[in-house]
Amino acid sequence: MKQHYDVVVVGGGPAGSTAANELALQGLSVMLLDRAGRIKPCGGAVPPQMLKDFDVPRDVLEAEVSSARMVSPSDNAVDMPIESGYVGMVDRGEFDEWLRARAESAGAVRETGTFLGLGMSDGTTRELHFLRGKKSDLSDAADTRKCTVTARYIIGADGAKSKVGKAAIPGAEKLQSVFAYHEIVETPTDGNSEIDVERCDVVYNGKLSPDFYSWVFPHGKTISVGTGTAVQGFGIRGAVSELRKQTGLDTAVTVRTEGAPIPMKPLKLWDDAKHVILAGDAAGVVAPASGEGIFYAMTCGRIVAETVAEAIAANDSTVLKQARKRFLKQHGKVFWVLGIMQRFWYHSDKRRERFVTMCADPDVQRLTWESYLNKRLVRKDPMAHLRIFIKDMGHLLGIVSETRKTS
Image (cartoon, rainbow, N blue to C red):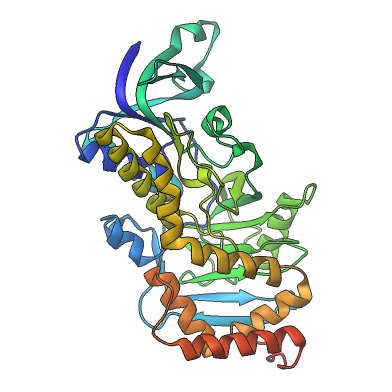
């Protein structure tokens, strides 16, 4: 097999599937290569703005939650109700497949297989080698499944440990990440758990995650229970087991378990100025502090697709560098603020305690939800930002007293 495409997209997650869909809709020939059975560990939370921006029907959601509960190391729980709107919850196994199927309907050619590497370039196109089929199906006849295609451009959307990135983009191997692990369990029907199926629980506790957070996110019939950390050697599976015990989910039936690195900072370089550009986790576009990735991956996928289409139309590969600039122009400030927040508030349990206390503040809750649900920094109330800054410093310095423990 040796075929030519305008674009080959490696990775069928939100970024890759979105890029393939956008390019196919423009009439370009696209191949979408994805490994079989890959499901990324993810809490699955998405804002309503994602559904609007990417024409995703609401019935794709597994559940909708109306509040979040922030839990401190001392078990101080602060509820953050959503006054207007909701947070959607998706199951990545089903949602990612829906996105891939949509790209195929738009005209993208789907291939199930494993990326092997990049080949020669003739100055206009570059070869891409992959192994067709599922890894578990491979035998001594594996050589017969080796395929080569050529493309003008290759989009690497194959995750935080991107093989495409390592093969073509200097510095891709230095992507900063935390490791996330979660267990999908069946939602209990006996009433013994402490879980509200319309609430996301975010747990800040150094025993469960020394430098990030843990979560319990409802998905309708199932629940995602997970945690993340960048600390080597931390017992992440044991932490999730402890969290399940604390929340009454230790006896719930486990549906599946998943683990993967989650990037925490965009790469400084996304393209090779020739044929290859990265998108999604491969480019590092997961929001610091929150770990939110689906919306940003799809936004990145769209921007990369638009940039690649422009490069094709202009026959100018140097246009690729515009993708990173455009993404950061839209979302760089949010990433910068969240990065500071993660480094500052996740530093110790003492600071996590004060952070959760701060979450009880009405200004913090309002601005948090407005920014998250609408995906825009709130500019209409600058005094609220000033009040938050003053209170923020008060909590840090211990001037503001801790709120009493709630349940």
